[in-house]
Length: 316
Image 1 (tube, helix red, strand yellow):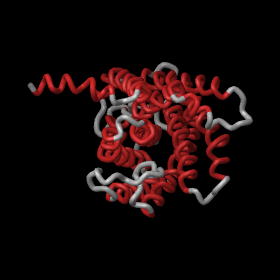
Image 2: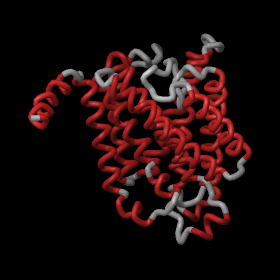
Image 3: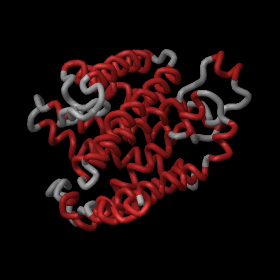
């Protein structure tokens, strides 16, 4: 009887979720599934934190594909974000959406992944310069506008870190330069986010956007304060260039924990909403991917080299 009740209620639950939400979940979930299949062999060989770092491209790509899907399901809303002086808003919205989905597939299948990562880094940097910085400049006291700008900087840094990790070994100097730039692109937002979370513990953790942590989240504000503390400590190591791989790895693990205990419940409760449900979870999961990609581009410590038979990614 319980089985028949479950089967009969499933269509009702799905019917209550708008098609635009289902499309984003479906495309993002498909990219995640393809990525999990593609990394099976590497997963079996990896040890310790290397297993976690393998998930970086997946955590970055799946939300990217979901956001790319929104360029087709919410075209007018996305097009309205483009500055007025840029022509062909709808066409650009479609092109960027298609490129996001294609890039996401490239990252998880590793087909032209370095090219895709490089173009993503440039794209997000252009978003910062053309949209986010001008929006923040209108009211520099708006911390949420600053958060959005720094989030895009971090997204650029994550893609740049992946590109650095895929540079051929004979171009080690180039890889090191790219990885260093990526480190600052991620470390500075992490530092600012950490301070913001310690000052505003009632808001959501991870990427401190304009939403209060719901009462139904177990632990409530403790996650924001804990995340803020880890952010400040980890960013200190990243800015100083000390134990960067370990700092980024622990930071990524922290953000993943926040996704599981804070944003998955939000996504379940707000399952029929893109803006209040999926986007919050996807945004923070993508930020987790950013940090893990940075960790993968950072050089191993001597003890890590000695304990690891082979590096899974070229060192940055």
